[in-house]
Length: 479
Image (cartoon, rainbow, N blue to C red; front, side):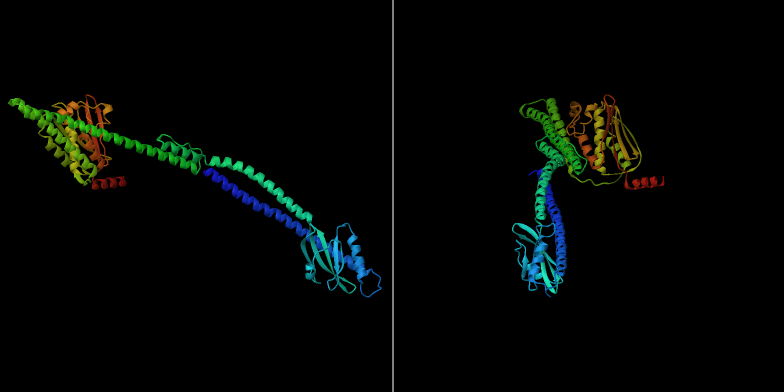
């Protein structure tokens, strides 16, 4: 069953129960009030008849000391036929509660009479010959006699009004329930519209349409739920996009890796086959061996870089305070024998929080790439300076540069801007990919600026050492 149908059904059940109980209470309250009023009037009429009987008994000629039974009957008959109430019925009984006079149709039992005494007025409601009556009982003192007067007052109209009240209320209740059902159907449809929107959106997303969004139709909790669902859908779509990109990147990685393996292996196998199957002169043998050695070194460098990337991704770096002077001195010693390039070093002495060996790997890769992108005799600048965010390392060359459309791809594994130049210098397109992985461990990233024909500037920022960070905080507090 739909939620809107459940809401409608529950509401109508509650409404029906509420109307039923309230209608029963209201009609019954009116009935009991009317019946109580009729009972009061019947008791008053009984008292009046008692007084009238006593008065009539006093006016009887004093022929006897005690009121005779036939006189009682005569007075009772006169009382029955007197007044405007021609349907009046009464019964008179003597001291032993034996009937002296009874109106026609007064056929009730003696239960009420037995309860009546000199100090008690009694009444009850009875059903007699298809009518409802209020029976009253009272005592009459006349000429030293104690008689008992009972009356019957027809109250069938009160019961008829109650039945009519219940009938009218049932009709009104049915009309209210029908109209309420229609109104609640519209209300439940409006209230559950956001749920239907979310259900439709869920089905669309389950079918693969991740761009579909539920429309917000209210500003209440369901409207907020719609917004939360759309945010979840956006996050899901973003994660799916990332997964697809990752899958595509892996496929590209496998394809590029296979391609990069194929080229040097083809050369190695070809030249090795020449050395194995032919008798070559010394010059050709040396040339073939040189090709085999060069391509083998390239395969070795590629495997080492790949291993470094895997270790970096899954390994745990040992961070400690590292002197920047040590890093720059290591680079100076590493590249001092490279006489075809001019290296310019300029840096501030500071302490950074890093894994020293990994940062040296990053700097060596950046310098190596700068050398490959530059012509012999070019200048390469290696700088370091303290900035607000930490300590900034910069490697700048004046080589061939990188096109703007290539900048987002150069950190991908096996991606090379100039494949012929890279392969000629034993490149495999893994250096910047390794640098990006290492810097990710340090909560940093490469910032690359490049212009074709003018050169490239690559920089990254590391956090300062603990002591220097404390000093900076101390200075900010004093400022």
